[in-house]
Length: 259
Image 1: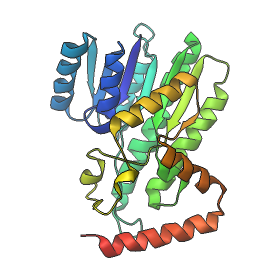
Image 2 (image 1 turned 180 degrees about the vertical axis):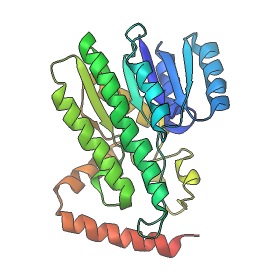
Image 3 (image 1 turned 30 degrees about the vertical axis):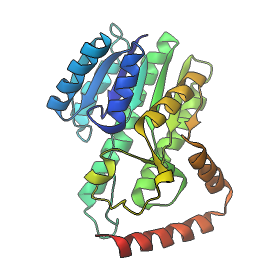
Image 4 (image 1 turned 90 degrees about the vertical axis):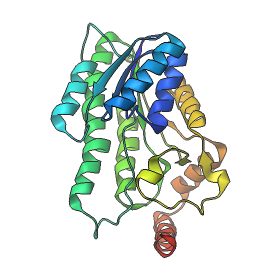
């Protein structure tokens, strides 16, 4: 089944991707900052699925540490067949009032690392004539929700552009754009999500399975669930000014209901 490298593998969607891929017989390269969590996951996957696992502890905000992961992707003797660029986090504070260092950190993890690792993987995969890259984007990439939307918009468009470039090479690129997923993501960002209707929540397994189906189909963009597919379709056709107005109203509502 080959080898998959998953960033942000220690929790949330990354852990779910690693578990599902192991259940399908993929060997895993697990990447995250928290070594103890990676070791726990590694042991679990080896025990449950008899796969080979490798741990790479790396902070993808650090260029040198990101390069170590890129070097693993370039290793011709130990090819990686699927790269899952999943590492990321939420940004709750406004850009104008927030800390610029936080914004730069977000760009490093969710833009630069995706760029660097995709470059490493696509070059090696193209030379072999096969492989896949899965970039975890967001429904926010179709909306206007602060710099997080800008970051995820880059991920989605970058994935589409690279998919076009690699067409016919045997290498596919997919951006998965989930809505709200039940993970640690919002708690870590200190976001109060108590008012969100249950029908807007997605489970990690649902996102992972739809994303991997899209990879198998060679789709450039995947939006999990019928609800979010409808929302994404609407956001693509409504006037951009209307999208900004609705986003402004939602932002004002979040500010008045925030704890």
